[in-house]
Image (cartoon, rainbow, N blue to C red):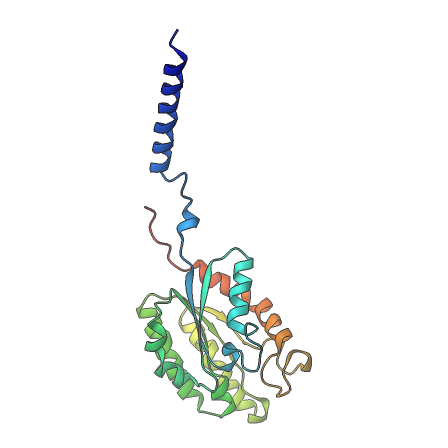
Length: 226
């Protein structure tokens, strides 16, 4: 029978070897612990920038918080500029891409409608944005917009078709048809200007849009294991 000190030393050696082997195959380093948050670009205007809302209550921080609550590590990059048009978004796209996003929400067009810009102009700017994101392999959620009703039914149809046509022509896109779905025109969900959502409005927007955002995130390529 081996001396007790020898048995203890031998047992320690076996345990140490087992720990070393397990560490080598990553048992003590869960993959999710080392994962970096997905970088999600929100390219938009005052609706994404959180115009008129307290700090931390706008679309971008609330979206990031909602995704975190669903167990998704995502850093939402705020590229919303109040007053921006689709042409403005295109002009500053390179600046936004400097953040190296892995996915993008494109939510522009509200100011095009408010200014009654030609729908063909908005279509060309959005198409250029989408083409450049596609060239970089960045999956996109395109968020549609509607024109104010006072501009007439014909303009409204042409304007809405800008977004639906782009989505139909680019099946790789995730499409959410109207940023303000369920919010537009409802005083309970809007600030006094009747245009920008209040905190309740942002919550309703996120409730409706989150499934589309999660679909987008599922399309982000995962790095190879190793």
